[in-house]
Image (cartoon, rainbow, N blue to C red; front, side, top):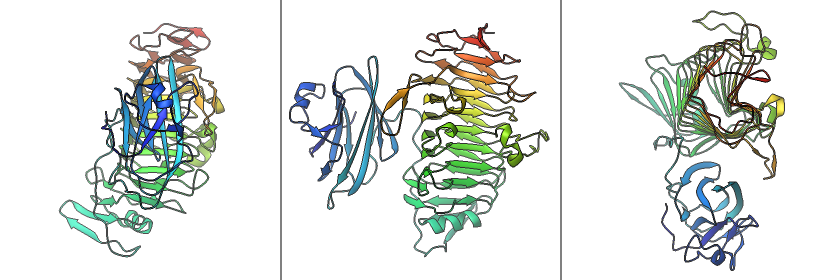
Length: 475
């Protein structure tokens, strides 16, 4: 819970009319009647200084905050408040308000006048999963772009960068063991920035910054936010936003993506492609994908559809299989995928021996576009799918804030779309929270896939496990 401010107050009001308002803080933050008196709209408002946002209303159990696209965490006890000290300019504050019987999305765009006190940092909240990005405060380089002044130590060179040109130059010049430390700020790349150098398993190259170091393009119709084509990169903490695709790995072996945020993406959020084997995506927040192409808005996409194998055909160096895109042994763990129009995780034909565990899928796979009707779809072989939670399966929010009918069918699915693939996948310890019209885990067909009895989907209309259209037993 956050302390109250002595400054002007924003009110995100949960009321029968459902709106975002601004007014005086009531004596009790749960006093909806007091809040309604004298309230005025926040959306479109001009604010003069630091503020406190709060939510008040009956039955509120949790409020999750997103400020200017940055996921801040959640308040779980009343009063639900968020201190804001914002720089002059335009801002957007969103709140997911969980109430008994459902949840509500609140959204406000507003301006802070020039001369207002700026925030020294993002508001302090107590975050819920995923964990917060690493606290990184790299020093900036005074050298003009594209020259970068590296600092060399026994563990490698550290490139301190604070312009888009310096980022591009450092990613081109880095060597095994080097670190590219990105200062807070927004980095606009008109042409995609590519991490083409390669580290080694013993000496990876690290690209690191805080969530306030934002890589972006012109928008969801722009270019990739970050392209990784070299091997053994560790990408930590940064944000990738406003791009046609978020982070795309092509032929990048052993790359780890850790604690990043990816959002406002035209198509998929993170894509392991062209034999980007032995990669990792962990402890990250991927949300608001499919903004331009909902049918391609997966949260994480591993491999390539067989229709694209002509473009992304590759042979994994360990398995030495020559059919299709053999991206292998990818680990996806501890992430949150939210408001994802296509599947939260699409594990394509041609992939093998990956692990998808301990992730949260919130309103993922609900659009029905391009068969997106589940949070997870395993079309490869030998995937271990364990400990994941699927929730909010009955809603789909469009960008204009309109709630559309959900096309969700099953919590998890496995499909065989190419002979020899879609088998030996094991589902264990997963939970589907809330009602779904189909199965907790639907197998199309069962084809050697295993669903353990420790999975849970109590409100799945057709039962825990399905083999095609028929109910089946867990094992």
